[in-house]
Image 1: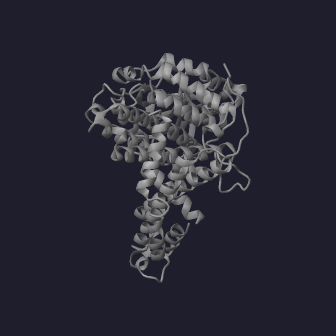
Image 2 (image 1 turned 90 degrees about the horizontal axis):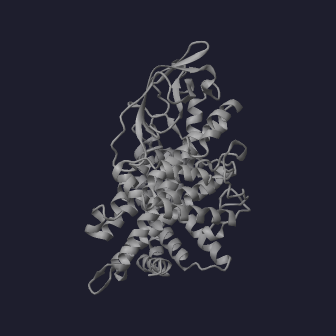
Length: 534
């Protein structure tokens, strides 16, 4: 293993940690992470970006690139060194995966699945024998693993596994079908979830490590996908597939717990992949806008285009901070379920938004394969679906904030937990939970952006762009949250008996004084164009 990076202890911004500092930008990180970033950026530029269109066009697995990524330690970043991994943390993983995905989203998802979904649970739950057989050989890129949870009829319902594993004394016999399995064709082992005791429902699900190929396991057709076409996706079909007794991962009945813990970590991976796609989209948009002449000047000089670029940069930066925060919490063994869901939701929707706006800025050139914009658009779409749809992320976030319970969100949560409609508190209704999740996400994004700007000022670093981002995000969050608070309260939100209407009135000025939202967007765009050398 070519281990380029030593582990460095650091602290990330956290509301639960009194003595914490903000990772305000990549330059604020220790040299370890900056070296990792540069290595991955250089590799992606040289090895992935020039080939990404070919991988996509030909539905070609980037095998040689994956092996080179393994040699750099990228296929097992958070796996301990004694098992053959790089021995780094999840923040390092997030930084590396973003850069790889910026070069090629297909390579990014292959890397993500092997790191988070396959190696993650085997390292955490596996026996010494299982780790020797199913971890070490998967660190160098010669072999990759996959994760088999989804089923044709179950989708996002991880607790409803219809695949069964029957205890036959000295072995287990698996029957059932798993679908949408990334790395399905190239993988040589899979973490598979199956029901071992139907009477226990989700507590009767167990996890298994299944080598591939193996008798009784057939692969379905390769799916012809909208995007990430360089990675294979297929079904795993088990028909009386016999696996050894010691193939079980953890204990019988631990499968649902293993799946949930793995998905929490995996969402950091998908968020990082989405960030890479989003960053690539912004790169293309800025480069094109600086060269395209219309109305006698580069379109980057037009306020309409600058507003788009500012919105793109704001959504990207807030999603990045959310992702890094989730990674830091995981690294420091703090709860991160809500934060991982926020990161995945924000980053995947940022990828979709930025790739859409990139095409809009390019116009007709964004709609053809001569430019990478349309590929980014197609690649981005899956990030809102796999490892939990955006809808599922919102329900996860809402569930967490209802447990926790600035001012508008407090009022909305308190009211929703007490107001009875249709025979239950309205906080139990998914329509309300979705609103609460959106409110919490926008608030947390704005808070991180604000703290970052403050940290930069405190440390005598440039903060013009970051202050404008903070002011824009926070003021629009105040307006949005106070509006949604009234919506949740209904008529009670419209009268002065409740504080919601006052919050709504107070919030409105924040988008006006000390520079309107429109001015903040122009400030942000001006700074971005400078950073790109335009």
